[in-house]
Image (cartoon, rainbow, N blue to C red; front, side, top):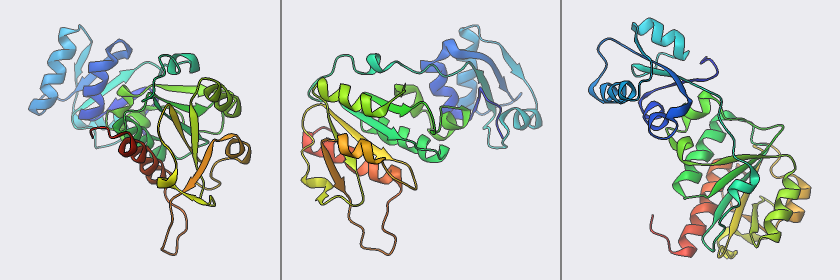
Length: 245
């Protein structure tokens, strides 16, 4: 298992160097890395970051995984944004994502990738009972983490109220909703709310949402993976807004 503050793999290292180089403390690589990794190493040296050559076994120990792709980096703690920073410059095309108690790190990382692909302005997570940004999150998000702003909210119900006061509507994914996802109006500033892998969105947050929608299931399993549900709603927003994908 990777140590906290350790990122590994080509995509995670490339995006960290491009967009979060000030967080990088150290870089390890093999004596004969592939060409694409050599480009990262050369850039790291240009930025005067400490680079150390080690053997493959050492890279595996540092990464906590044999899938390090010949590069491991140590970074400082992830810096969460404030709620106010994410809510700056809200426009008619603003799109946000609220994640209510998502606890599986793989789901969290995949949600970050989906949100980044949909061009979200920011992701909000609660301060407790949630997966947090770690080295594993960064690796699994395949670089998307470096392009998405994430804020921790002490109270998601109050966050929803604040969003609504600023003209941001909230559409909540709820398996028991009467309305199908494509029947909702996704125009204007919008936040997509999805919930815990097992319990869904908490009752109070559903009550505060502007709209509840469901994605129908015709198979025997009656609930979608939370990332799939979020992606369907996010890309419905894109479709209705006629954005270029």
